[in-house]
Amino acid sequence: DKSEGSRGEEVHFDYAFLRNHEGGEKATVLVGRCRRSKYLTAHVVPSKGESEEWVVDEVMKDLHDMGHHGQLLLKGDQESPLRCVFERIAEKRGDKETIIENAPKGDSKGNGIAERAVQQLEEIVRVHKLALENLVGQQIPIGHPCMAWLVRHAADVVNRYLVMKDGTTSYERIKGWKFTDEMRVFAHPVLHRV
Image (cartoon, rainbow, N blue to C red; front, top):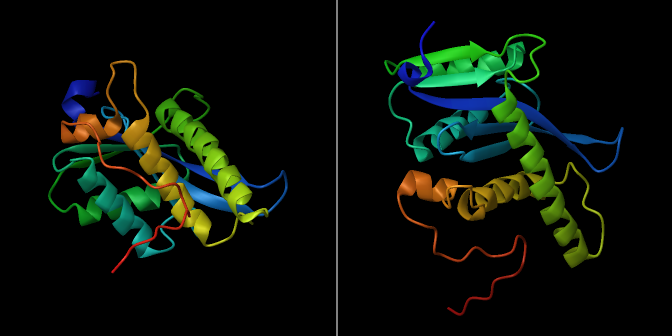
């Protein structure tokens, strides 16, 4: 068994299921978190697994944004849909070593990094969704196209503004400097004079 330090970078993944109410329509979200930087990535997907190539392409972009260009460990639960995504990522990474690891079955802590990322994403999406509903004066269906953008926006907010115990953000851990630009509130109009 390889020691943790020799496995390169680690990114943990799991699926989240967002709903407006119990038993209602759901949005499936692929959620990932880098072990070292705590960078959060999230994409609304049509279903679990590699049903569309763009899902794999988006994760590849995320891995690039995280700075993962060498050896990489992808960790998830034992579901085959997630394994399919991992295998496609490994193929696309070519000769760069990609280790695929499944959390042990029945081990609730086995994929704890991803499970905590799912909880965090669900909380921040709920806050931003309520703010959007307040802005437009009606409830947003979970299947509305804006939800895909809202999920991405929520992950960006976490990466750029959530300060960890050491006083840094995920953005700062990756880039080496703090995010100082301004992020606009989701779906608020921006006026621009040409």
